[in-house]
Length: 179
Image (cartoon, rainbow, N blue to C red; front, top):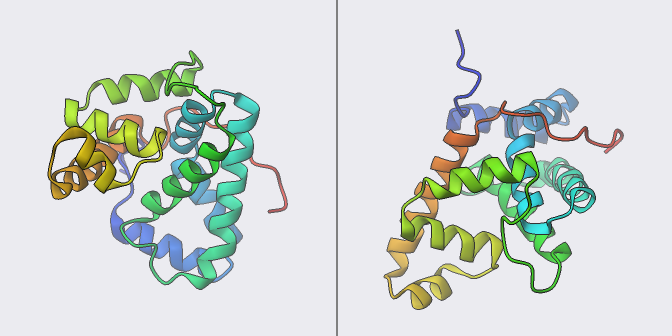
């Protein structure tokens, strides 16, 4: 039996990316079912607006669908690629002067709780990178750490967040049909 909360294995993501690249529309649904709630929580935490977060998530999944054909490998992981896309789009819609993870929406609340479980370096790195838009080098300088330490902290934090939030916690809003 498959654990519904366990994140997909990297080879599952590779197969899913191959299906997306081949134009398999069901693969897009699988991607959304797997990661929709997690990336919606990220988008909501950054934008602090449900409408903007929904738009960001829809745009991010559309971008992955369009770009999957041109990408043989998204780099580190399909989830990493998707969350980076969401973060980039959400930062463009974030209100000026907004602080991260302040909304009380359920998805953002779960994200805030998951972030609180990280170590101080992991939490600060994630907040500065994903909510502040800082590079690894900028984070390293700001925190007085080696860049490799920040890289490890970010990867560990993302894995921890994915483990805590899981792919099936709460469904994210339905995507707009016809991507």
